[in-house]
Structure formats: structure tokens, C-alpha cells
Figure 1 (spheres, rainbow, N blue to C red):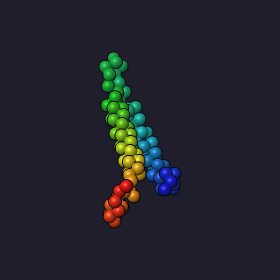
Figure 2: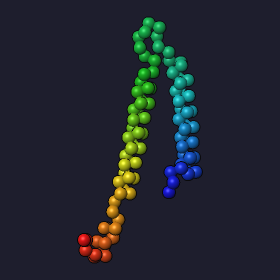
Figure 3: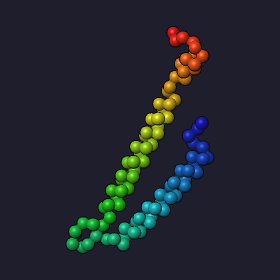
Figure 4: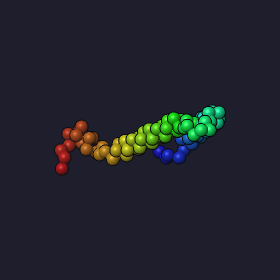
Length: 90
């Protein structure tokens, strides 16, 4: 099965569309919460931390899924079948 297919293209497009809309809404919301002129901090750094944490979690989940798929493909299915029918290993 190919990775580039219509289903995955639609999922990617939908995800990108939703993320863009969410980013635009967050940017619009952050524009209203400007930091004070005295330089006292603030200004939405918590949102950036949440986005970074979310990106790290998604990247780790993707890496785990990739590793699991690679691990599953590398198993030896012939040895399992030979054990079921009683053929001795060489």
C-alpha cells in the first residue's frame, strides 16, 4: 500500500486546514492581549509553550507509530507458520 494516496491526501488537507484556522484564531486572540508598555512580560507565552508541547507529543506519536510499523514488518512469519504445522527448525 502506498503512503501517497487519496485518503491520506484528504486527511492531510483537512488537518492543515483545521490547524491554519486554529492558528489564525490564536493570532487574532493574541493581538488583543498585548504586553504592558513597562516591559512586565505577559503576552501569551503560555500559548507558545502549549503549541511546542503539542508538536513534541505529535512528533513522538508519529515516531512511535513509524517504529511499530517497521518492527511489525520485520518479523519472521515463516517461523511462526512452521511451528503451527510441526516442521522442525533447521
